[in-house]
Picture 1: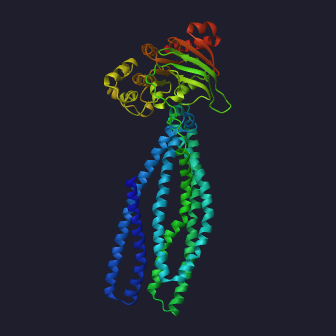
Picture 2: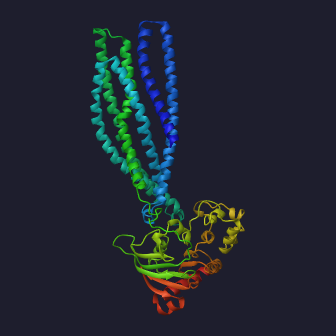
Picture 3: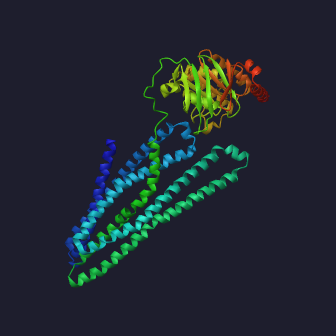
Amino acid sequence: MPGNVRIYLAGLICSVFVAASTSAFALLTRSMVNKIFVDQNVTASWFVAAAVISVAIIKGLSTYFGVVFNGMLRRDVVTNYQTLQFRKLTSQSLMFLSNKHPSKQIAQVVLQAKAAADAFLTVTTTIVRDILTLLGLVCVMVFQEPMMSMFAALALPLIIISLSSITRKVREFSKAENELAGQVYSLGSEALEGIRTVKSYQLEDKTRTTFSKAVESMQERALKLERLAAFASPVMETLGGIIVGCFIVYASWQSLTNGKTPGEFMAFIMAFLFAYEPAKRLASVNVTLQRKLIQIGRMYELLDKKEPETTDAENAIVLDEIKGELEFENVKFGYKKNQPFLHGVSFKVSPGETIAIVGRSGSGKTTIINLILRLVSPNAGKIKLDGVNLNRIGFKQLRQAVSLVSQDVFLFENSIRENIRDGKPDATDEEIREAVRLANVEEFTKDLPDGLDTHIGPNATNLSGGQRQRIAIARAILKASPVIIFDEATSALDGESERMIINSQIKLSENRTLIIVAHRLSTIQAADRIILLDDGYVIANGTHDELEKSSDLYRSLFHLGETYGKQKSG
């Protein structure tokens, strides 16, 4: 921050020199006209020329360094705000993040940070420079022609009244433009992320048409906004022309009756003309700021949000050792108010026990996983880890204690080795090799030219679904958490790979708690107990043999999964 202050002060000094040199130019006009063209003093022309060159050099260098310092400030402001927003986004709850498309959120992070930088520089440098320049030139004008300076000042209320209505409309239009820009980012990203579906269903024309319409709507709104903002210029031009015209008449009268010199009039006119541009910028700066303030307002809505995902409870504790006992006590949860999704769910998992959670789609399996990870919090009831309420355990320790291997595998655009190492950043090569062996990753990496160092492309499209899942399983194994959740983790694997993973699960279960969510019965049968969910209720809890005898729903799911497994193996 001290470095930024020094940069800002340096830029401010440059603004002072720009303002002073501009006023000096206007004053030199008087000497140039009177001494050179009226008095025809050749000697004076050398001094005036030297003064003009000196002032020009000072103004040029001051302008250059001012731009450089402003660029440095802009970089720091943009970097700071983008980092703050991204940190805030990643600390928000899963429910908050799922309400808006990721590409739209990132677009807003980028655009809002730039808007903040533009507004900051406009207020702290442009306005300061233009005010100083204007004050210096007004002093020159008053010194040369007090009466005409007063007449020029009368135009100020007219300018303010004319631009105030423009400002209000610009703010309204800017809000709509930002919404449309976010929609364009979202549609474009969505089409590219789902390009396989787009091509397989021949939806190219549909997505192009939708995207084109969104772009056209945004551009139409932007054009209206530009026309509205540009209306400030003709207002200023007209008022400026009226003032210059009146001054020409006044100057002619003063020259004939009071013997005013041409140099005095030229100094006034030059000061007025020099003052015109900074005055116009200052008059329209509010219009420019309104466009940025909409985005800045949204940025601070995010920055002012609480951080549920990073703020531990005041009474948070650190467990010396986590054994892996999990317990749900009458847990109720709903994604929306007054719309419960889980209804008094209760069950207990002992340390080292393997349980399977099964049920039809929408029965609450994924919600239970999200609750264990504290991606969402229960509306009522308690979830305990080793007898301690989850909300009393720090996020860092909780997330370290639980590993997740899901059906929708996410891998970073990095090497296979580094994606596995994310489970344990300080892992040794031997530990990585063991995780690779247990997850059967080496079965396909041995045929790759770079082996584990093979680079994974965007969205891991150069790997099959089964290969991606095996990497994710290796990552979870390396993490060595006391609780591991497999959420349909073997759904994309062939029969042989699935058997290897099941064997790995059996080995892992010797000293870890395993929670398996699956449809394939080959996976479920390895569990010590099976919890059957339906419409947010636990309707059965027991071994495979017990549920097959007592539950019609389980039997139907079992036979459906058995058929699916045979088809998959075939």
